[in-house]
Structure formats: C-alpha cells, structure tokens
Image (cartoon, rainbow, N blue to C red; front, side, top):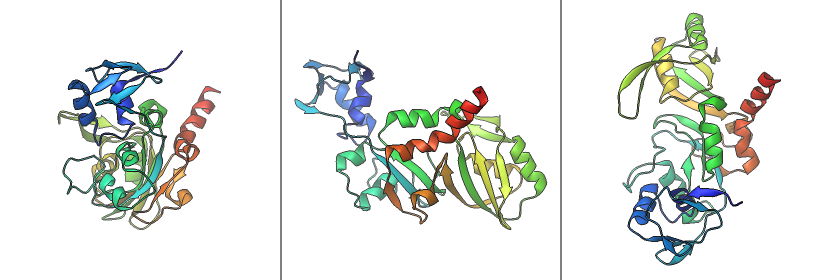
Length: 264
C-alpha cells in the first residue's frame, strides 16, 4: 500500500518554491495537478507515487539533504521575502556549495537559534528528521556554552539544574510563566557555564540565566545529541558541511538510548 503525503509537503520538497506560502498559492490558484486532476487544497493527501505537475510540467521531490552549519551571529533562521535580509539561507547561497538552487530552496532549519546565538544548526529537507528532533517527548539533548557578565554562583547553578521559572510567549504574543525541566549546568571557566537542556523554548537558555541574575554576553550551541561542532569539524563560525543521513540522525541517538534504558 502506497504511503500518502500532503500535497503541500510534496511540493515543498521539490524545491520549486522558496517558501511554503508560494506553494500554497500555486495550489489554491489551480496551478497544480495530481495524476491529471486539478487540486486546490494544500492539505490534499496524495500517494508518493502520484504524478504531480506545476503548470503542466511534472515535478519530483529531491533527494534528502543534510547540512550542519556553525551559525554566525547576526543572521536569522527564518526565510524572508526581503532579499536584503541576513538569513541562514542567503548565507549558504553565498557559500557556493555544490547544491542546486532548488535543493537550497527545499531546506529548512531543524529548530532555530536566535539572531545573536551562534553554533550548531542542522538544515534539511527531511521531514522525518525534523519530526523526530522537535517532538518534546523525545527529549533531544542540546548543549550550550554561555559567556556571562559575571561569575555564576553554585546556588544559581543548583537552581538551574532543578528547574526555574521563566517568562514565555505563545504564538499570539501572550506571556505566561513556565518552569523549565531539570537540566545539566556546570561552570567551565571564570565567567563561562555549560548547560544541557532537553527542551527548546524560545530564548530559553538566556531567560534561565537572566532568572538567576546573569546576563549573557555570548551564547553558542556546541552539540545536539551525539552531533557536535567538534566531531563534524566545523568549529569556526560560518563553517558549513554536508553530512550523511547517519550523522544527522545521530543527533537523536542519546534520546533513543536513554528511552531504551528507561523501558528496560
């Protein structure tokens, strides 16, 4: 039995559109046919073997691509219609990687780092990897090194480890309080701390440190699961490398192993 996929997901992986909104617009304006039939619902489910055409030209999904980027400071993870906006996508286009324009169009970031945070970011067009890494119940480990404005106390580290209340916003901008889960936190330098969290609220590490009275001077993500900047060999800001599927999925291995131990 052929597996089904939403039409909008299929088109996103063809690389024909820079943004999903463009793909949705083409669907709703009758530019897309599936097996010869015009479809105007972006969420219409099709077979993976279906023949999909854009304005009469058949289009196909691209190969799975996995990139590891040591994200520099000052660039955004979101796609933007503003050609002058500094995003990870405009950044990698300038890198002249051996990728087709369509292949770059198909990419999205697995999670985000805020504008001023540097470090490991995975880009892919593999929805399965994204789903696995972003599900809160999978508890994928993410490790950060923060440089602070002052030395952090042992009492503050203990508070961070046990969980601390931080302000968070929903998609509509409504603010509420949230208690973070238990985490690992240790001092590694005079004003440096290494924190490993199993969740990923917006600006979480910065908010956690602010809650104990420390301002973050710089923040870098050094690893996700078993995937790290050092292991990949992209320790310099701006370094980028295409990695294998096995390497990409190793970002989830710690979680899988821990779950097996808990069940065993």
